[in-house]
Amino acid sequence: MTKREALLKKLSTYQFAAHDLQLFLDTHPGDETTIEQMSRYLRLAEPLAEQYEEQYGSLTKRDDDGNNWNWIKAPWPWENGEDC
Amino acid sequence: MFVYEKKLQYPINIKTPNAKLAKVIMSQLGGPDGELGAALRYLNQRYTMPMPELKATLTDIGTEELNHIEMIGTILYQLTKNLTVEQIKAAGFDAYFVDHTLGVYPQSAGGVPFTTAYIASKGDAITDLHEDLAAEQKARTTYDNILRLADDPDVKDAIRFLREREVVHYQRFGENLRLLTDKLDERNFYAFNPEFDKACFKKKKGTQ
Image (cartoon, rainbow over all chains, first blue to last red; front, side, top):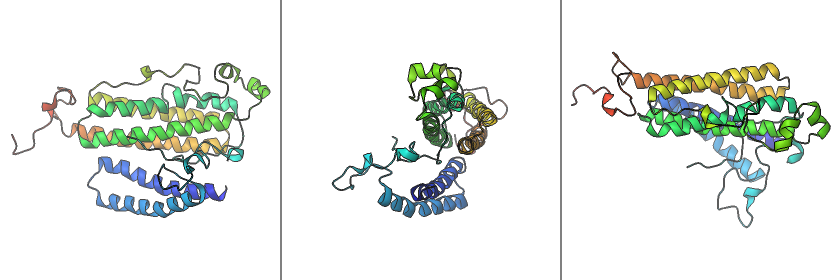
């Protein structure tokens, strides 16, 4: 696993944990412990997303990419190995 | 609206092409119990659903299914890229190749193109939630069958993740059904269509 893949996996793990709890909250909207836990995972994901975007390119389209449209750079999610 | 994130929900890195395996996994893209049908089913059913919990669940699970379409597409792409004509012929992938080359196309393992006949949107919340519960179990069985046929650990890892999501979604839809029937007349849930006959919801005590 490359350094990029390892960082992306760590980020995705926190985001996924938050997402799974969000689905649970759809049917248990008053569960404060779960809301707290979900927020904790989102907070853990935030700096990792920033770090990833700084090192490997945008995860979402934004207007602060400077003079270059970075969106078209960096590997696409389905690419691996020699694609990258 | 939807916003794209340039990443998979769960990482996939398949190192060994395997057209034979792609041929069966294809069913989870465009087959009768595939991810494309799942996304369309939930994202269309949600408009007329009663109760905020049900609208939220269908929107969020429907959106997650879009991730799963992308994951299956990724598996198909990685399993078939760089194949030689000899490998294509040996794997029996030639029938697919002649129509699509190595392009990803939503069809079943048997070659039937995706059709919306695979999904239902009945406009009755009880009926549609039962459809959704059944759909998750059918997809779970298909993933179990794929796991019987696959021997590549990189493929099995991603398929196991997708299989587990079917189980979780089934659980959430079960809660949806319970939340709904709790609001209906327990003597006869089926006396009315909860999406069409809005008056069927139980009046709260002390209100008109």
